[in-house]
Length: 193
Image 1: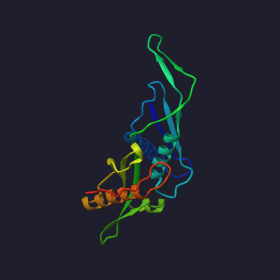
Image 2: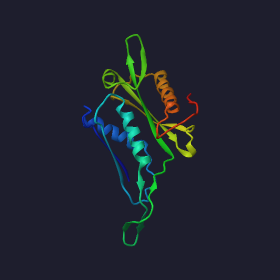
Image 3: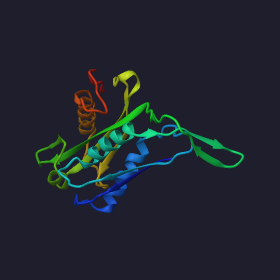
Image 4: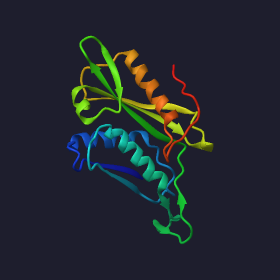
């Protein structure tokens, strides 16, 4: 019932990249109860690419979904018919919203280090790790969160070490606490192990 479409537009990204992002976003969003009768499609169009485009796609999807309004519907099983009822529309309810942070893993020859929010130029020079946390939206509290997905772009031999992955997780957790945008806000301190 919940479908995502990513269009690279003028960003310079190819459709293979767009499809990978579609799959990533689809894997971490849990579709709310859409009255078991509606199909909701979110299309994300990238007009430019200054970097951290995966994170921008996640923020845009979360903003679009939390701003969506759904009309009341009923399903008549005998006639196999869905009816849209007149009346007030309601918001979609999510228990968790995904929040991502893309980290660039640079290998300098003297060691590796992590950079958050890489530009598109920096993304082309290194391996990327995208961490996706599920952040609780209940009662305005974001203290409850868990890792939903950890993925590396491009595919191939891993340029990461356990220490670098821990750094990526820690940086993502800190970013969630620092983020004060319209979708997720928090005043709690990060918890990483």
